[in-house]
Length: 397
Image (cartoon, helix red, strand yellow):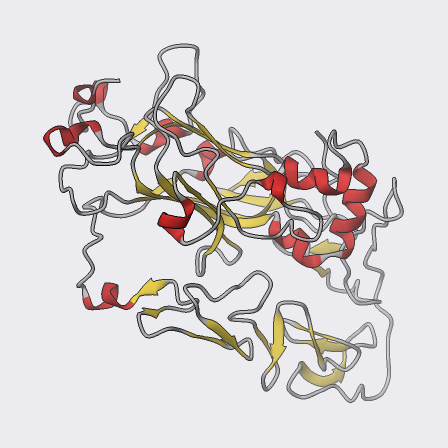
């Protein structure tokens, strides 16, 4: 690949972001390409953000195909709150210890008990060759810890997903972000006389998953530029996460994979009339009266007969509030510690909700500006070409 083939001002020679998501023919491949490392020694850093405006459950490996050499350093990140906060999914480097102060591992080094561990791998970060263009985030290898090496015991996997929220959340995203931190150099030292040879180029990104509908829908449609669950079982909401009006005869519950193989729908039932006070917790309930189902009507993040308990991911602080941090998925980064689930106590050099930002960025004194401008974003419509949205029933491989 010759770098003089890239000219953003000429349509025939431009390599815009949408070429990462088009259908690939045999030859030649189409690809997005970054600017070259013309401002060396300033880091050449680019963010590529994929957003669906919908909660997605991943069902297969994330596959990134580079047209250039695979980067020397890269981080794959995820968000569960539509890009408000980000968590590392996996680190990639030619030298994990030097780049991220982490010992190198592969998914094969994990187990059922450590499957949620965030690792740094050196497996995919090598220089350019025709057979080494692909980077994986291994979903199926993690499934295999529960379903067996050939994924034949899916009942075991479904049982774990059904009963372990943090395992479900691990495979759930609203957004993905690819942070390209250092291009493929191929040598110990950068050749400053030929900086045009250093850049990033990606020909394809595949993300396979399904809409999260809490097992209350079999179809997810793309309507009015949004992904939407077609909710069943008298449920409603973006993720079928609550009972319809007049169908609140018992508290909402997600569908269940159990018992295998048919599962349980947990259908919302018609409301019943009720008389008398419910003695609802004033901090956790919308009001002190029973609703049509005879239950207290709880605020977001709150549960229990009296609305005095918090749902997972929330903690009680004058009512249930979403956790800012925890010790499972919302880890404080860069040595920060989580204080009562409400804030991260950051080291002096870092700031941000999860201590993810160097303080020098706020002061404008960091030297990491790559000149790349705004992060690249993948079009949801184009990403639908690789996102499997057909069903919210158990995974099919």
